[in-house]
Amino acid sequence: MPHLRPFGPTAIAAALLVPLAGCTTAADGAEPRPHAGARPDGTAQDGGDGGAQDGGSGDADADGGTGGGTGGDSGDAGGDGPLSGFTVVIDPGHNGGNADASEEISRQVPAGPNDKECDTVGAEGESGYEEHAFTLDFSLHMRDELEERGAEVVLTREDDDGVGPCIDERAEIGNEAGADAAVSVHADGGPESGRGFHVIAPGELDGFTDDIVGPSMRLAEELRDTFEADSGVPIADYIAEDGLDERTDLGGLNMSDVPKVFLEAGNMRNADDAELLEDAQWREDAAAVAADAVAAFLLAEEG
Image (cartoon, rainbow, N blue to C red; front, side):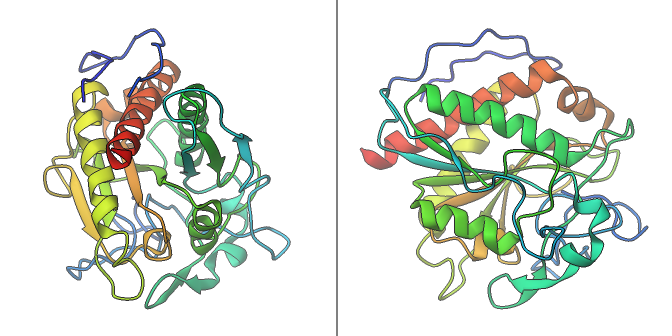
């Protein structure tokens, strides 16, 4: 599928186009590590589910329940356009209240064969810009793009003031919506010397992901190819292989019954990546690129 936004390598400044036709910081004070969660290869990681954390983990509601504000609400019932009839779930990683809710977000929840912490706090750049703020802003722009193309879009959270939802609930929102595709948005907290984005797809787990591995990988490949071509961020040089990481330890993927991937849009601790991630215009334009990829996947699957 042709890429519609020819972005430069250091900054993106593109006007909105016509719709298509067709995380890790160091855990508990440890040295920064390339990804949250225990990796299948045995590399030590913190207990989070995607993205990064500093001093906490998971998502849960501050009153002991779960959910972050209006999580699970759809912004639009869908309309005319090439994506009319499709449902997309966008999952902004983490939440703004997680750091003050350590007890709630550390409780164990189903994550596939094993339980994991409800959620994580998320990464933070050198400037103090936090992952939870990035993921919500990026996700809102992505929602707007997809709705303009006719898709029904559901967000797992719509504000940055709450706690959660937990990783299993994030997956359940996509399941209940019967989503045709789901994307969890993150920004990594890897080593300062490491640069780039990567996409995480579910590995095969009998009884959990075996029915979504194929379409999820196709979504991951489309997102990888489109983001590499048009976002201005290179493929990660410190994690994953050719921008793709297949994992079986992330509850947000393991508990999903619909095609789902994680986008780690860049490394918040790398100066070059951070310059883009913290730029409001880049976030808007890069979210449109991600929407391009989701649209291409949906239309290809339909065909």
